[in-house]
Amino acid sequence: GENVEQHPSTLSVQEGDSAVIKCTYSDSASNYFPWYKQELGKRPQLIIDIRSNVGEKKDQRIAVTLNKTAKHFSLHITETQPEDSAVYFCAAPTSGSARQLTFGSGTQLTVLP
Amino acid sequence: DAEITQSPRHKITETGRQVTLACHQTWNHNNMFWYRQDLGHGLRLIHYSYGVQDTNKGEVSDGYSVSRSNTEDLPLTLESAASSQTSVYFCASSGSRTGYRNEQFFGPGTRLTVL
Image 1 (cartoon, each protein chain N blue to C red):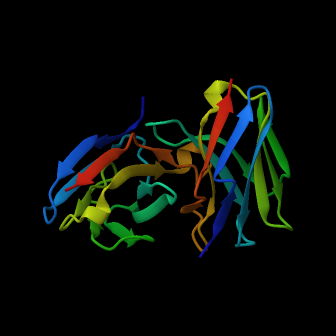
Image 2: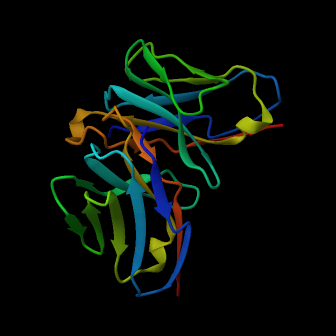
């Protein structure tokens, strides 16, 4: 099945700096890559996703880039703010099933004031 | 507004007891999922369903079962609770209304403690 590796597991940045989280996947047929944000004690919520027919997608301070050749995708957060502190999960379709997602193990992002 | 709910939000039970966690969504989504979340492991799939009367095992299904008798509900049953099943459980659903068939919407979670 699909294998999704996520790095780093923890990340601390100063407020205003950028943060980058990277994920690799194993199934070259995967075509949809979402990112979820989970604040402490809350449910995971989709913040951005990208389809395999584009290389980059932006939404205000967040962006996702995709390199299909290398089979990796990244989340970029610019001008980080304290409210960006959360756990971030990447995901990819589970091999053989477009309706299932395999999640990465998560990155705890801490934005220091 | 359409939503997905879980009950109870917190549950403490004893080893060996049967426990059922409820999940209810009002999006009319065909696809429903149960995950458990443990530190360092992210979200691991327990069971999933693509429609009424359809249920399938996920990555960590041992000791769990589900049933799907209608579109809205996918209850998760722990047949004989074990301490290793202490975790936070999330239900999720997805469907075609969003335009992205894979996008999953999560419930608020149930924190289960097995003593």
